[in-house]
Amino acid sequence: MKMNPMSVMMPKSRPLIHLPGGGIDMKVLINQRDPRQLEKVVVVMGATGTGKSRLSIDLATRFHAEVVNSDKMQVYKGLDVVTNKITDEERQGIPHHLLGLIDPNSDFTAASFCNMATAATKGIVNRGKLPIIVGGSNSFIEALIDGEDSKFGSRYQCCFLWVDVSLPVLHSFVSERVDRMVEKGMIDEVQEIFNPMHSDYSTGIRRSIGVPEFDRFFRAKPFCDGETRARLLEEAIRQTKYNTCKLACRQLEKIIRLRNVKGWKIHRLDATQVFRKQGKEEADKEWENLVAGPSARIVSKFLYSQHSSSATSTVVYPGAATVVGGRRGMRIGEPVAIY
View 1 (cartoon, rainbow, N blue to C red):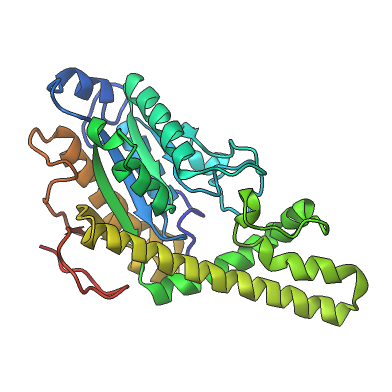
View 2 (cartoon, rainbow, N blue to C red):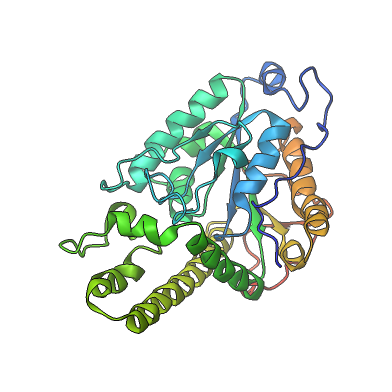
């Protein structure tokens, strides 16, 4: 059975630098920082299901950090299974911001995200911790970093980490994940917010993949026989899987556009082999070797470098590839050369 990136949390790794209390003390960094330098922020990107949340926790436990959610559906209250919110257990006590906070019937915009994420980031920095922004809504991240009205880019220096998985492997995984979501009560969650008098799925949490796909099933359920209900349910689940795979493709395309068009400097971490492992122990080793370990070294270099650029340095560690703007023509899922 393929491993769920969040199903088994990695044991806390030994801190990169031994300080009282373990980990890297961000207050030490702040006291030693040149006042002319920008505050530093880590941004974890990737398509749905690649392990972004797991990596954010791995980094947060090593660098005394707090997490700012940038997933546009996970900001809403409710539908925890449908939206794949990180659980309390998986958070390992790490404070999370903009997670399960917004009225599910409201329309949370990119502008709203920018205002709230900026405020959350400022608060984290003031507490002497490292802000880690994580989520699959790249349009929100782009608005925050490069938006016309956003001042975030002039205040903060960002290190971009991209957790990538080849699309054939990822599509198989997210399809299996939908089956697990069904087992965890996804259908009951969606039925709780289903309203036969309300067929608009264009605002709020009702936009989440896994909600509109079940509309036909719930409408027909009281009036059809068991065989028809089973067929409609199967169709709804199949459509949810299909739309989730489409979402992963769109997210990947946006990341590549940010690299090629916007010129963002991004560290790509290929987690494909983690998903191909059959056992927990082997998968955990691959995650540490290919994703968590290289990411921690990249972030450590980013935090302590006195001459890093506005995005990241171009130092490359085993298991990671630094992806910079200008390298056009890479097909989605194509391996990136390490240089």
